[in-house]
Image (cartoon, rainbow, N blue to C red):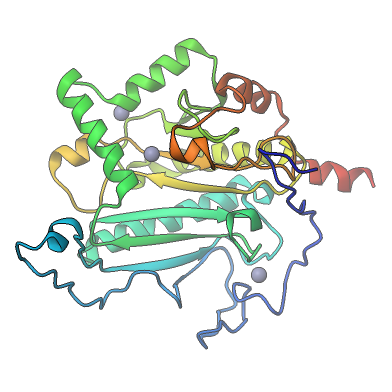
Length: 332
Ligand SMILES: [Zn+2]
Ligand SMILES: [Zn+2]
Ligand SMILES: [Zn+2]
């Protein structure tokens, strides 16, 4: 099937081995840069062999002059470091396949990295994100995320932070705390919740099954999670969302996911205005193989919704948190 709003994607079954000798993320294997992975248990973090931003980037000299070109074409050098974090040694396990305990280890790794780069590097921001699935351009199914630390605040979190600060100045209140209260009261877009987190299809959702997951406490960064229980609640909501996603079209659901939080370095106001949350941006629309495209009118004029966030939330909320793959295995 092929139509204006969807394209056939190959559905991914669960036929992967637990260890793949050709995978550059599996334990003990050699990476193309020449380094050998340790025989790791739990998570494994390393600096990307092909980082998009580098620590030793030359300063960019932009010529100051009266010429039009220097008025229009402004550039700034960006320094940074890119990390890769494998979620587990298992080649065939995604977040949806992992236990809450195993996901907690991933969160602890994120926390340790945040603390480490905040204390030991000059960088301003850390963007933790996961690109999952071939349709998202991720060629290796071994579950992993990336963390890019940069000397500047990137555009997305900068735009959000700008709005959080404006709202705080105007209303003397936190935008995301207020939004959380509205969603909890309306109960129209809730996908899942626990004592620590609320997951909704946001009011402004662009992707059909996009979710926004907001911390119920107004914490500014992931270091402000208090103790094991907070981390467990975080892990649990990740487990619930990723499992529901996989169950939706009975496939390993592709998405880009990322955490937004306070900059590593910033003003007191920038810190105070923040509120930890994360986004799942998945492209699938109607089945495991039909995805939404952002083209034509959507690129040139404005986004269109294929389904409302209320419809998407209802469907996701109704889904089981027992992974379909496990049921299939159990019944065979
Ligand atoms: Zn692997
Ligand atoms: Zn808040
Ligand atoms: Zn955000």
